[in-house]
Image 1 (tube, rainbow, N blue to C red):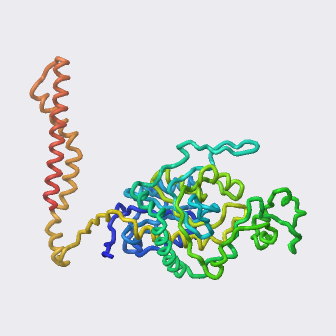
Image 2 (cartoon, rainbow, N blue to C red):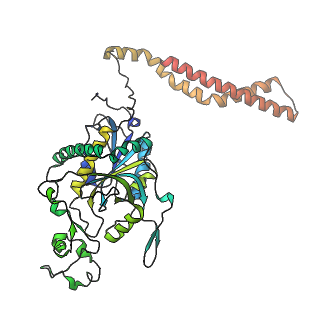
Image 3 (tube, rainbow, N blue to C red):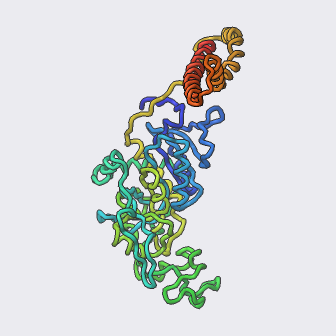
Length: 444
């Protein structure tokens, strides 16, 4: 690969990666090929910009990693607004992390925990009317956001080709191993095929039998389709969810002995501020919109810039939601992001060279500086003359005209004053430019 020089300006960064959770940003940090932030060189940011950044390179792209202060579309929108204050040339924003997934994609393939979802459009799903027995979602066009920029849309069309998708998945699997090694294999390891269980929507995450801790069905809150807060803080193993399930979907038996490679799925992704932990509501949303996942920040980014969501499935958006798959999912999403950027091509940013002294030693520079001192000392008075030339020019012109013409006629005096103002203004403007030009000539 051709060596890419270090950027000299924030305006050379065209791609931003945004992460809402620390576990997501830690994974993304490992995919950078080069870091540009150090003590000797800092790109800085606009005084009104409150974001935190890391600048670097991934493949041929100058990329800025944006650390969001938390989840939700409001924080995503605020973060994007601040981003645009400092980075004026961002053409594409990638939202990378973890999300909730649905059981099956629009192409009929099963979606498993750890698989990566890429958005081709976003659906704002949590705006509507809450009736006594149902929630009616607004489905007008303004709540279904447009597609990515044409170049990215064309590029992502490759995912729909089975051979290309398998090639991308192989590349992503290789990069995932590198990410896991960088993070520490245990911290981002595959949790295990036996931990990937999809239950029927009616099978709730609740207390059922008398447990040694004393939590049981007699608590009252876990009866008749309800779930108590203590149950939501417990794992499926602690509650024995699999022991009481009438059935659940798991990985094919042939994949039980190893960590399966994550798959890539392209499709619409639902976005909103609500955390969805209901299998029934998830399936209803899929039936209405055809989404393949649910997340919380993309719709906020889209209000300000074109974005693509790249998120790995960490749960099935049902009441059995847990954080056990977040680290592995974040690593998978980061690996997929790098695989995408290594193939995504844009025009290389123009590099503006930094002027160098060019072989003049310190003695020569000191001598040159000494010879310029008289002119430098005169720069201040020259600038002051330029600043006050407007007022002095008008005043002097009025005096000059009045000394040549005296009249008691009011109209004549008004005309003289107007003529004096115009002449004085022109004189002052030309004089200011001449003074500045002389100052620059003297300084050169």
